[in-house]
Image 1 (cartoon, rainbow, N blue to C red):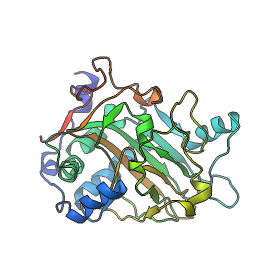
Image 2 (tube, helix red, strand yellow):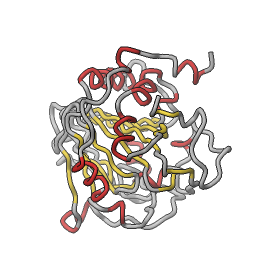
Image 3 (cartoon, rainbow, N blue to C red):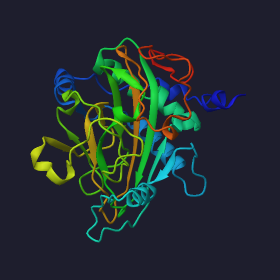
Image 4 (cartoon, helix red, strand yellow):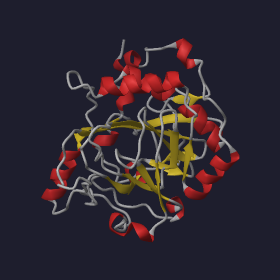
Length: 312
């Protein structure tokens, strides 16, 4: 059995039959189109929330963590930023981290449980409903761990800078099995930024420092001038989904809680009106597990690396 086949062999038919708790509303659709982000409350069934929690715990296990080749501690971003003359964004009063802050990319390529979740959970069906798309394909994923006291912010950034994707609708689906507030790492979105008509330079996530070799427009200092922007920080509960346009500028607060951790998954799906577009700014390490050699700019996504997630 090939590695890909092994990863995709884990199935739970009883769970696959459980879809979203409800349809996307007109108001939620309007918010996505207007603001570039929509908060879908109580849409994931409890069984899927439990599946996500268990899968994330397995991936972040200190004894046997999953390895994708794009596994980074936020402290590594901070060290690179310092080397380049930048500063780390840390919300702790002492500017120190007291817990792990980790990110892993493309886990669905190497972890059977996460592939199952990314492919068979209600996420893709919800995207099809939201975007009115006939087909939805799995593009990429990232998972995040911000332990209590870790403190490091996720700098405001734009996902399009990191993706080889063009077109109107690539949906980034974020969910956590934990209660998430401003204390332990709430997500923040610059409303309407998906309509700015710009692709910004990729940054180092823990810092505004630009990733070496990145090209594009310069992202303004949003963290230092939040009052100048229409920013919405979203508290979320288990069962919620937050979906944003891949061009929407967003970030996350550091976890300053003494007791609450924050686990989260961000899964990215392409729709009918998304296509391949090579971006020089897209980091090689974050794209290493996908084969783009068959694609030219403008091609529709297809094949084993971009599996059809809806309909199935």
